Length: 378
Ligand code: SF4
Image (cartoon, rainbow, N blue to C red; front, side, top):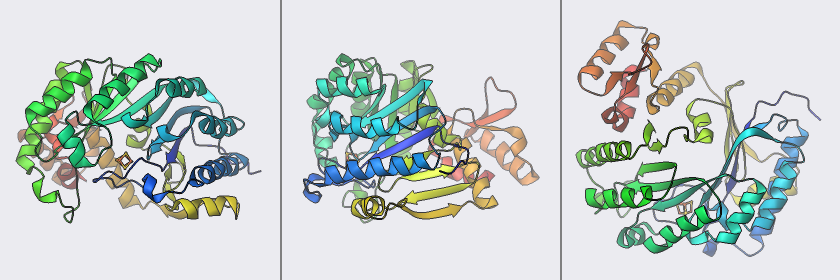
């Protein structure tokens, strides 16, 4: 067994199965039509092998502060299968006292009893993909649930005793109006949700809906409206696409956004070691990933990349501009950078942080233009 110190207190698990493939989805996920009945067992077996290989290398010895089950649709995994996977994990690892363990879920796979079982396993936060509360838009996006199912699923989560619930919405959906968005946010914030993520729908130019996407000006109007509305509801706009009630920021995602280390399991999953400045990725294909683990007993890593100094510098800026804390003023080392930042402040894209005096941050308008700001300042 390797005795290398374990830098990973944050783990991600990728569950690749979905009911159907949504029209806009870029994640590695397989709709029912692309899977065979035996795939679920093969997945569980391989996941257990991956945990054992990482555990035997001594990489699971630090108390776990955050776990994230993403996908795909992890809530399609039966609780007994989930239990077998995590019993293996906890034969190597243990949870830190204030851990956050999130599971992504879709309204079509949220049953009350199932979530009571997940809660018993230790899951204490659920992130539910609502995306829209208008049937016409859900259909357009290829989602399998409807508006009613989303609201019932949300009720069931709270009934199951999950207190920390986040929901996801999409904005920039063709045909979506400000009234639609307002009604979605209003109805979701009637529930005691602690967190809301609102992502801008992005499509490739070859996608059939691409030509119907709102233009940049329209998008900006929507993003500014969302910012104002959610802040009015007592949520903090702490990251470009994320709003949280006080003390309820997504701890696992903050590890990504602050350049922390995380180890990931499952097909297509990416990991990052801050200490070694390396990123590595598992094979995406479920079968290739499982084959490496169960037939060859090797780690299913497809590639490893060592970050160059330039990449690190760029990532530093990209991450800082996403967050409400922004960046320290002394990152502006050249006259060119200082002049650009002065101009961005005058134009309303950057502002001095209201309480952290040595920092600058993106304004809500700046959040919407973050890529351009990074280009200017890095
Ligand atoms: S449910 Fe999520 S992961 Fe699955 S296809 Fe739809 S967007 Fe992709």
